Image (cartoon, rainbow, N blue to C red; front, side, top):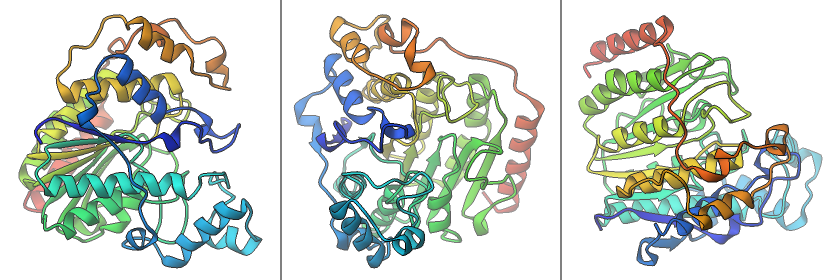
Length: 374
């Protein structure tokens, strides 16, 4: 149970939110394909994700909302009142063929991961997870089901009493934070882009003591992320002393992503996740945002390599290159992709200055932590 376990599934291979949606792209299937092409997937360490049942989803979500998702998927249509009540078929949450089964499978992976952790597994990677905006009775921000919240609740139900949730997505993990406001058993730490949807997670937002939020400016670089992890995240985590850490490893903060203005390299993300993983004896690593098929596939496949301690190739083998050359993206950046998106796994580092607004925010949060006794 010491070696990492990968949980994914084939439901993601041909599933799309629609041609013009940011999630029209391949992500989970291409990640698994690249991992296999690199020779990094021992079949004994791979599990097909089960689909969570309506009863399991009701641990966090309202039964009527769950029923509405399933009924809308079956009909591929919904009355106006259903769309407005549950925020489906609108506001970036389209009706599409797998709109219930796909998120229910991501939730099933998270629930299974929590159960495996309770049985002694050390590290689980579920790249389809990380849908952190979902609300109990509404879809939000492309998220129909909040699999991180369900995973955290399952860990608590399994008897864990101190769980750290680290969110590196470019967008604030508002749905997870809201689910655990004031709960001393869960500490949420989110690093996200300021003035970016959902426009929550302000520096002063402490969620009744259960969260620390650090909004960061545009052009956020590798040096700044490393500084935040070392000076803020690690001390907070060490003081909280979690039994398990759940990490949302969204790839939308990478420089090539169209839905943020951050400029991280995938290597900086890997280092941050690995540092966070070290804060607890056991860890669940989720996916999250990521809307450039090449950058997200390379990021999550490389993360699996890092979790396993594999040597990262300087140039991808032919089979890996073929996976990346087979991706398509109907976006201006996808029409003439640079050659290194096909041939390399790791980005060139993107260091830079640590700006005053970053260090000042870290100082303020450390003072808050001291006041809170952490």
